[in-house]
Length: 241
Ligand SMILES: [Zn+2]
Ligand SMILES: [Zn+2]
Image (cartoon, rainbow, N blue to C red; front, side):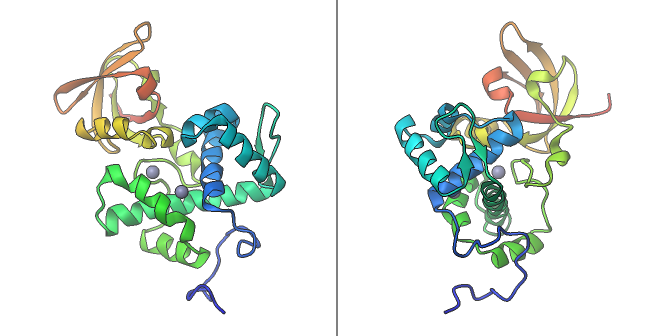
């Protein structure tokens, strides 16, 4: 029995043996968060995972044990968790599917930006490698998701963008990226959308006060003050003065 009607299409670089050894939805969500942590912070911390996944530390510990048994990760119980090669490939695969699904929802289905991240979680796990390839072509091979986060392999595209916490007074910048960890926070995301702090928007830094942990930017003639806790998740590209 053929499960995928498109299974004759090319499989791209999906993990080998994906058909018989595909992670569960939960494991895929862990793998995607782990990929983001490793990509941007250089390490995977179990305590941070509990916070990000919104579950109790004991639940995380149990899932990590299962993931180590199934060879997605190593190092459970020690300080640093690492993705195995299989784990990394699976993490890249689900991250790509998540980001392509976000574009599908936004561009084709016209789902408003605040909802696409959550809606994508309901769909991304069911996408076959051949369907992923079709999405990639129809969506013009995007390098970043609608929030500006890089698809695996395109990290260099975002490497020149600085977090708002690192800008200087009077700098003119274009907002380029809202980090995945802010995508997970609906209150923050809604605040950013209401105040038009979104990829593509040009802003000017009015003030940055490290002792106060605040940065104030001018958006559309309105001054908006952000704490560093949120500002470090928003990245911008510097413009010529
Ligand atoms: Zn998901
Ligand atoms: Zn996104």
